[in-house]
Length: 396
Image (cartoon, rainbow, N blue to C red):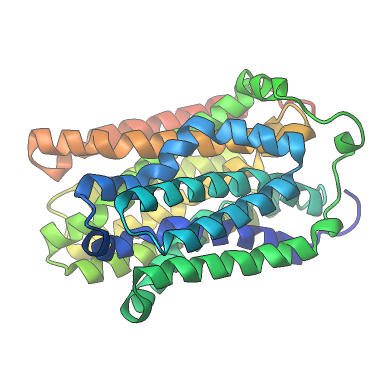
């Protein structure tokens, strides 16, 4: 793409990702009301939370291939409409089956949108700004989910969990309408004038070392992140005497700190910072932060400051990884497939790390037991980043 970057369109595309990420942030605050109204079990409540990660772990790369095959703009819009429709229908759920089915459909829509948008951002940003714009994209998840975590409280008070579901759908539809208005202003990649990629391109991406390393780094990053963000409310309640509502607010701000780290990565790279250095800084901060968070003797101030540093500096990692998608993709027409691999890697980490940490904590009967596993994950993240940086840059 020639000419100046359309930053307004970049922000709108990131906003589209944040809108569908609200579907993740809306659930934790609403779980108590869901359990009372629908009579769902604790196990089912867990599935309502984790169904997005389960689906992404199995099909994100495949859905990325679909986006590459049929067009990222159409796929992103279809995903947003699917999310909104399922959220509206879900608001009228009367039993656990209905809420799980609609959450599954929301998950498909979320993945369709989130794997499509990085390719669209790469088109509206010129070569000089593309890496910065893609790094900013990494903020979509903490921004959307964190905003919804903060907004859900008042909505629950005045409109119930059904109101939260409807509000999320309205926001998604509004942003989808804005995206539809600018759809013709998003340049098509040169490959779309020739042959479209086939599903064989997905397998090419799966065999490519660069995308595999990006996915591996994201796997271990996301596992650490969810283990800390997921258990932090319990630790604040059990170890520091917080009320559950207060702990939820603290965690919401810590999640938003991750968005700050994501945006900062793009700014730093535009000033010449090297991707490897940003990832290594994130790894060191996460290693220190998760240690003080899980250390049972930490004071409330140390625990919260450690968690904030963990989240904010850790936010340098996902944004940096997304900035590498155009560099590591076998060709421009496979951007969504590579983005799908990153989403899939993150989902695998989110599925595995919390149960592993929970097992270690339960077996040893103290929170400290999770620290060695988390430090190993931080080391693997750093080593994988070093290996990726030493690989020759692919020619795309």
